[in-house]
Length: 415
Image (tube, rainbow, N blue to C red; front, side, top):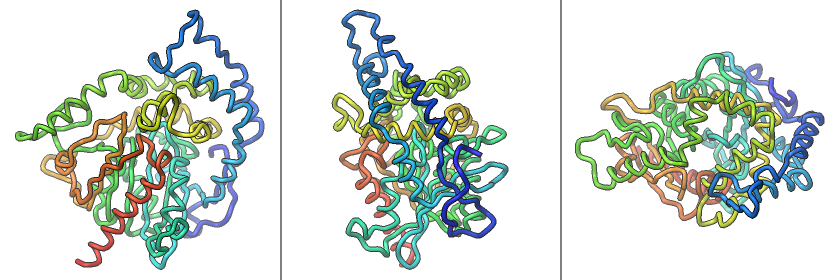
């Protein structure tokens, strides 16, 4: 059981299958975080007189120092804890794991269910600004009949979910979450969204469970057609277009360059990195802040991250108060023990949408390349929002996802 308590209102799911949960961080845990932050020495990175590296050598020391100072003096975890606890949360036992889940029932007479899957260094809290927009569109001037029942789990090993006893790849994680939805929550039909590493999990769910998954929405192209694994530089086809060839080559170059360095380390040596990050909130902040800065919408970044300081610290606090820094890195390293290409000649059959936000972490694929691995019915290029669109531009993200669901629902009812 992660740090928290089993309390709160009873979830609207079959009794006996879940345990109500709310975050309740012990004060001594918060005090330890404050103490370790107070011990941070901002001069350690400035031993070279007059050196102002900015972001050229990793996290900008000046930005990091300002974030830690704000964290110590102005940030209020209890406020964010209270806001998160306003949502229905519970834990559910599935295949020996204790999964933490947030669920917001939608407005309307028969709201479809949508599963939202986060990545790293995000958490379930990534979606908190879009949950009510999706579940209760009438709060932002929409029609309550367009409401969606929103389900947001913490991925295994992340936040308040436990780590699997054996390596859990992206396809296996998809089976696990499908069982959560169908066997625990009683859902017979659902949509799934995935970003970052949540994308390949969502894609495998759509491929493996087309009888239950009504539609797939992603912001990253994870699982591809046979012969074209992510980052390989291969198109997997004999007659690629010039755009497809350019995309795969640019993607390969990006992932073998500086932006891909963290990925190789976390994939190959998580337990080398974990002790330093788990023991030092300042060290964890330095490691994560760089990602939030470099991967956010470049048009909004300027001299600092596009996200608010509270957004970034809250994401980090989920890892710190739950004690999941190490387990999340282990889980991260094991995700790709499952294949990331589809079987030869196969594609994802369910209606699929791809939202190509201006994300510096990835190269935008041509729609034709995306369509080689799935039944692509919607391809959008939102004008703003980087790797974390649910936080950066929650309004745009929510509209894109909701419009896809409405489009698919209309199509399914007219058949």
